[in-house]
Image: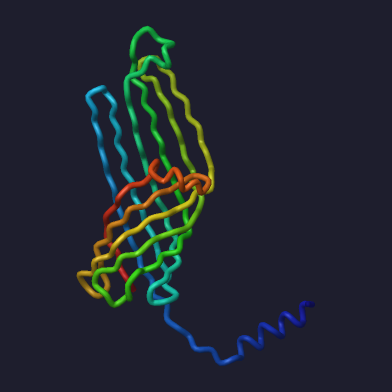
Length: 195
């Protein structure tokens, strides 16, 4: 098709009577925090912030753009695989920045106060991994850029027409390896505003 035909086709489509539908937009903010301390010196702390904007194209389906910032710090005593005669602290920190594009599917009509849903999608994850041995003065940082799969389920509980409390269990799996979903799954809670 040449340029003139493409231009004529675009003009014809603009002149056709089309029925316009107003889009419904939802903004959400979520937060998660967990901390574990074990007797053998193993400690783990994770915090996750998530912000998203959903564009509903039907009453129960939406496309979601999401940004997540997650930080996990794990520390434990180690003898570096037997290389040292004594135990020294090792600290591993993961800082993940995830940009994803997801499909959000409500399981009930949008007029319900209690709305369960599931999320499935993918995106890009930038992971900065830092491994440190503070007593030895050794530190190593590696940056990884990988595609990631996104999966989860959640619920919104509306307490006004436009505002809801939102709880969500979500996982991010590098290279769409959903068999490893437990490695980065976490429950978050937050608020959602519908416009």
